[in-house]
Image (cartoon, rainbow, N blue to C red; front, side, top):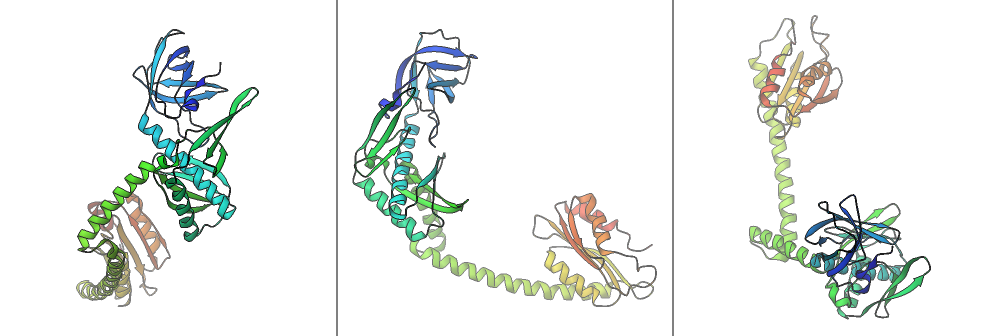
Amino acid sequence: MPTRRLFDEDPKLCDFRSAVLSVRDATWIELEATAFFPEDGGQRSDRGTIDGIEVLELSTEGMTIWHRLARGVDWPAGRLVEGRVDADLRRDHRQQHSGQHLLSRVFHARYDAPTRGFHMGEEVSTVDIDRDPVSAEEARAVEIEVNRVVMENRPVVTTVRPREGELPLRIVGIGGYDEQPCCGTHVSHTGEIGIVKVLRWERMKGLTRVEFVCGERALRLFQGTLDAVDSTARLLSAGWLEIPQLVERAIEEAKRQERAARDWRKRWAVLEADRIVGATPRRAGGALLVQMWIEGADLETLRSMANAILSRGPAMVVLAGSGDGTKVAWVAGRTEDLPPGLEALDARELLARALSPLGGKGGGSRTFAQGSCAASEAACRESLGSLALAD
């Protein structure tokens, strides 16, 4: 039979008593009446308890609402139970849903952008509007008008139109400003919404998805943001409004220092290559065969070092280094003029042989290849040492 929907009669109602009509599979309960709102129209389900047992899920079958409990019960039909909806969550849902109605109304009225979808998340909510793209100026203008209506504290009134064989059609009106069909729970005056804050927006399949928060969510977000801004300002010994300029300056300085460090790493790589060439005995035919672990070298440094060694005459080189601290970098290279007996050496094949047991990946050509792996330094050194560059 149809469940009497107490949340339609009083969206603020959270505590209620009702008779059990039936129990299915021990955990699914049908009540004569309920204040628990089941997920519908983009609004999330209520949470709470029935006789102290947590309600895990709500399901609608036709005009009947079923409640799934956290544990099984053997309640007989007619038993009176006490339901308790999470009042804080209900208030949050009412704020988010009413705020969405205002956002949808203003986007439609200002920019002829009707709403095509609404989703209420745990942290943020979204509304999909039929407009692509939305500018920052448009979003700001919508936000200002919505909050003006909030501060006017207009009444929010729900009217009901009966429908044969169906749930009544509910129309939510906001003080002569907006009317929308809706099955959700809403505030009684717009002032209860608190504030509506648009966070960001993005293109989504020809629409624009607008992310927003209302009421206490907006307050929590503002508090967290303010804490972060204040902590950052203290670190920079600056005022809040000076942060963007100082951060921009710090980023530019970091980029400049990285460019300088990269230049010095290249210079060091060439000097180290000269040292390695001088300390490595040449094979018959004047060839250099180098396989080494270079402490602290990233991929760019290894490339510079390998190219410097290869420029000193016939050579085959395989180098590995500790890279960016999370992955080990590898390079392998050879000159075209390797003497007889070494001419079959292949940089790509050698690199694949070294990386295969380490779970790494790489690629390149016969004369030069590069790659990386996440293996330990000890494992990399062992694999590097196992390469036989010559008989």
